[in-house]
Length: 467
Image (tube, rainbow, N blue to C red; front, top):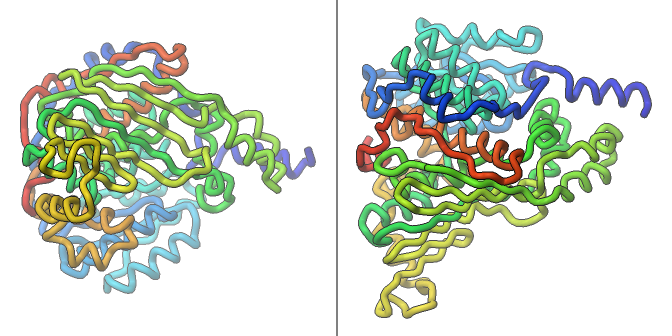
C-alpha cells in the first residue's frame, strides 16, 4: 500500500472528533446485575417539568440528519413555540449551511460553535442560561456522553437513535435523568409515521384483538453511503461494521412494535436470541471500490449481512427483529403485527380482518376495505396535523415533523413526553444484547428490567395525548 493510503487508513480508524478508538465492547457482566446496581427508581415515568413557553434549542451535529431536524423546526419557530439558539459541528461548511437555512425562518442568528479544533466545544451550548434542550444528531458514540453532560448542566436532551450502543451507557442515562430530573428522549421518528400510528390506533380500538406476534426490521442498503467520503464523517458508520456483529439499529422497527404491545406500559421484553448470517455483500462492495483504503479493509468486516433476533415478552408474545444494511434490496421495516382479530403486513401496507364478512379468509382487504379502515382508524394526531405534514413531507413523509412537533409542544405545555428515557434505553440495550448473544454462539440473553418494576403499571400510550 502506498504511504499516503496507509496514512488515510490510519486516520480513518484511529482518530477524529466523532470517531471512536474502540467500538462494540459489550460489557461482560450480567446485565440484570448491572441494572440492579445502577440505583434506578423509575421516577421519570410520567414525569412533567415546568412549561417552557418558547423552547430554546441547541443543536449539535449538522450533517444530513441534523439538517433535516433543523428544517422540521421551521414551522415551530415561525409559530413561536421554539427558537434555535446555538449550533455546533466539526465542519465549517455544515455550520454555514445550517446558518443559511435557519436565517430563512428565524430572524435572530444562533450562536455558532466551531468544533473543528476542540472536541469539547459543544459543551459551550450546555448552559441553562442559553438553552433548554440539547438536540443531538452526531455519530452514535457521542449520543450518550453528550446527553449525560447536558442533563448534568440542567438541560433536557433529545438524541438521535440509538440512545447508546453500550448497555452501561443506557443505564447511566436513566440514572442521570432520574437524578437531575431532566427529560432524556430518544427521538425515534418511525413511531410517528402514518402507517405505524394507523396500526397503533387499530390496536387501541380493539381491531387486532389479543396480540400474539410481530415482525419488524431495519432493511436498508447503505453500502454506497458507508463507503462515501462525505455522507458519514470519517466513515464512522463503517467502523461499527468492522468491529461488531449484531443488530446496531434496532429502534426503527422495534419502537413501533413496543408501542403496539404496551411494552413498559403493561408488558416488558423478557429475553432474546440473536443470530447473524455470514458476511458477503459489504466486503464485496469494499473490494470493488475504486478507493484503495476501502480495498484494504474488505477482509475486516465483522458484521454478518443479515442479523435476526427473536424476542419474548413477559406476557408470552414473540417478536422477530431483523437488521440488514449490506444486501442490495428495497427498503423495508416489515411492520407485521398478528392478533386474534386482524393481521397487518407492511411494505406495502396490507390489512387482513379475521372475519369472512370483511373480505373472506386468506384474502387481504381490497382497496376499498383498506381505505375504509384507514379513514376510520387514522390516528387523531395525524389527522390534526395533516396540513403541516403536507408542508413538511421532506422529513421522511412527514413523520420527522410530527416527532419534533410532539417534543416541542409537550415541553411548551409542561406535560410528560410521548417517549421517556426508559423507552430509549430499552430499545438501545436490545442492540447491545444482540452483540452479546451472537458472540456467545446465539445463546439466550435475558433483558433486564430497567424500570424498577414500573413497567407493570398498565397505561394508554402518551402518544394519544392531545397537544
